[in-house]
Image (cartoon, rainbow, N blue to C red):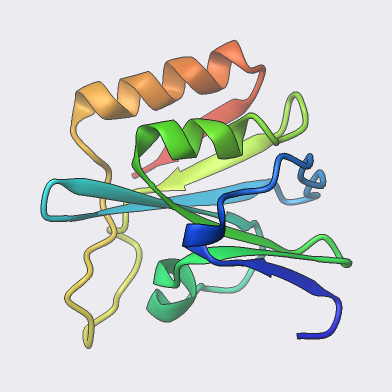
Length: 132
């Protein structure tokens, strides 16, 4: 992929800061068994596909496009650490998304996990909004 940095989930994540996004970032979450996955993706006006949200790994291109999918709270915190101070994040609960061909259901995790992410984001100076 010309101009893109793509990192597989097994390669570990980079610690470089992520670019600021004019439209903020979107955060999606879903469970597989007892595990919670999270995707942080550059905010846009267009709808995201299930494949786009659910594909594993990290993409950051020279135009500022970011798509990072991680497993678990600890990895999500590492991604949030890379965002600029005061960055806007919109966490979408999935009720506005339709993926009829997929078994994956985009949803918010249990309230205690949502609260931990909210507290961590606030502590880091990020503006997290949950869109239900």
